[in-house]
Length: 222
Length: 248
Image (tube, rainbow over all chains, first blue to last red; front, side, top):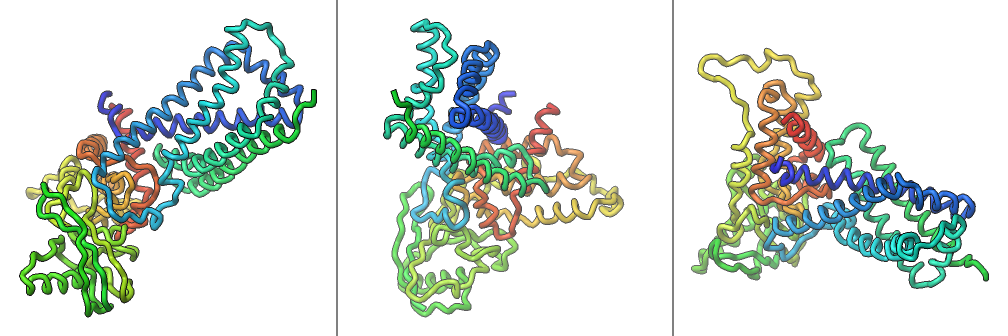
């Protein structure tokens, strides 16, 4: 078993499975968020459910946080090992001749997304914990929509979200399809997986960008 | 044509190397890259200087001995060729060519452009074989019918010459393409299935022990491989490995 934990292939499978889990979560997150544009009441209803349902709060949310932690800790561990594998670098290395920038720089796009997650957690998760458990406020099923829209009032935050989603798009562009290869799936369905990856990597981040910009340019007037 | 060469010179494994500039005139487009280095070395020897050391043997793209990182790419800018098959017509008069050894912690430099690739031998020895009694009891290979598609894939995997270009190209110096080709050539055949579980585990364990990096699926290895070994082999090895480890 210890051999499996140290194995390069097992570590890549862990990256792939945690990555796919996060890809799935992203779609669910987007589905809820888009309602903040098209149906604010539904957004409030779903957000309240997610915020107070025991299964979501105490089982699914910890699994999600664990998934994020596993993905970035393993990613950084692999990056350190990969750097050691070429201790003396080339004077001239033409990486662009044989591989895309995105595939060669997952650590950069990943770290930007991780930094964004810090801000995102501060904006929403820390706020929720504070609201519910520290300040001990009563349940208010109508607060989520205006809290979300207000978050996007400052230009700097909206800009940071937009830039982060672009980097997320690049990360997904390589990572989503790559996770199948890591798990040994390379067959007649691979071209379809790659096409779906590209569609997903554009549509989902673009959708999030749209939501951020929509709320920034349509503030709630008091 | 006249070329400006920047060649990695390193006295021995323990010395610090550096890129040294050379100017070489009279290079013909029909020369191979190694013949160009031969001309340079004759000049150096005639002038009482130490020639540039580089690996070479068959000079027809079969043995996997020649290496060289040429302008940042293993085996140079051409595709599906080894350095010995690379023609100088791929370069222009006045070009600057940077020539370095294949770089990987698992491929230490011995001298100049010569690196120690015995890590590949040890991966191969860890499981890249089948155990057959050849002392008078050999069975005709054709006695077992094999699906044509599997036979072809096995053969393609077996065309890997073990040159190390995959490691040299990979940003992580990963040896997954090499190891997966050696695993695949047996995994696809009934003769290889007998020891399949131990083989993939032992070869991957040895690959990791040698200090190669992880595969991040950039595909650089496949592009630079002089034999066109496919990434499908890496996926196959991953499947073999997962199946083997779950079996215990």
